[in-house]
Image: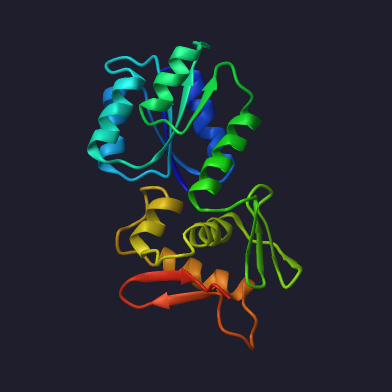
Length: 223
C-alpha cells in the first residue's frame, strides 16, 4: 500500500518514513501543507498521515481542499493539541481517524492496519480467500493450512491483490502501490513478481490463485 506522510518536524517525518517502509509500505513525504496538497492531488494514496500544525497550509485546510477535489484517500490526522474541538473538526472535515502526539509507533501501525482493513471490508486481520489465508498484521501466509514464506515483494503484491479482491488491479496500479518511482515505465517488474508469487502459492494441479485479465490487469481468484 502507498502512504503519504505530511509532517513538518524533520525527525518525526524521517522516522515515520523509515518505520513505515520497514513495515512494508511504500511511503512519500512532504514537509508543508502546500507540498502535501500537491503530492496528494497528483498521485493516489491509500492513506495519508496528516499533521494539523503545518506551515504554508494547515491540516484542516488541506483536508478540506482534498475532499473538495474528490480525493478518497484515508486520512489519519496527527496533532499535539488534545482537545475535543480539534478532534471533532478533523473528523467532520473528512478525517478517518485521529492520533494525539506523542504516540507509540505500534499504535500508529495498528490504526493504519485497521483503517486499510475496514476500507477493504475485512472484519479482522485474518483474510481468507478459498484455501489462501493471509494474516494482515503478522504478514504470514498459508495455503491449505500450510505456511508459505513470501519475500517482501511477493507479500506486498499478494496483499495488494487480496485487499482489492473484488476488482481487477491494473499493472500501473500495482507499480504505484508496491514499488517506488525508480522503476522504468516499461519494465517487467510486475510480470516477474506475479510469476514468482504464483510459483510460491499455487498448486500444480489446480487453477492459479491469480487470474490474468488480459489488457486490464490481475485479480485474485475468489474460490
